[in-house]
Amino acid sequence: MAPAPNTVSTPPMRNPDEFVYVNQDGSVRELTPDERQYLAEDFEPGDGARPYIKCFFSSRNGWGSLSGFLPRKRVPRKHLIEPANPDYRPVEVDTLRQHIADGRLVGDLVTENVDGSVTVAPNPHISRQERFDRLRKLQLSREREREKLARHPDTAREP
Image (tube, rainbow, N blue to C red; front, side):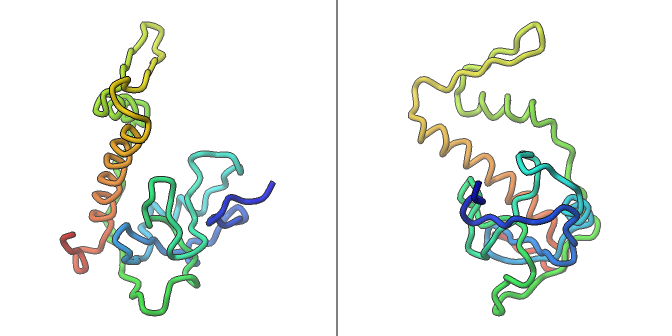
């Protein structure tokens, strides 16, 4: 099976020194300590938790964002690689709770069942595209906030 467009096949145990992080706004920074650890982990090819590694600077993720890990050698020469905030630690996220909250925010019909399972039916009053656009807006907002916190305090800027 051929790799998806704009992705890089990478061997396990990637060397974090060979990567940088591209923010939504197109700026580039070094990796935070947690990102370095994350990139060094082994992942199975189909693991949805594996890092998104861009093939090109201009590659976009599934939400349409420029954000993602990029091999350092692929950073255009005109871009300065900024330092990362060495004190930044991502907040632990309960992804199930986040998906439930997101569904409710976009108007989905969410039922938390007594057995602990969750049933979600898409909002019947909006199109699939509108639902995706609303979820995309939530995701990109969270991503921007994480990126803002991961910037080194000396290089932090307002959007």
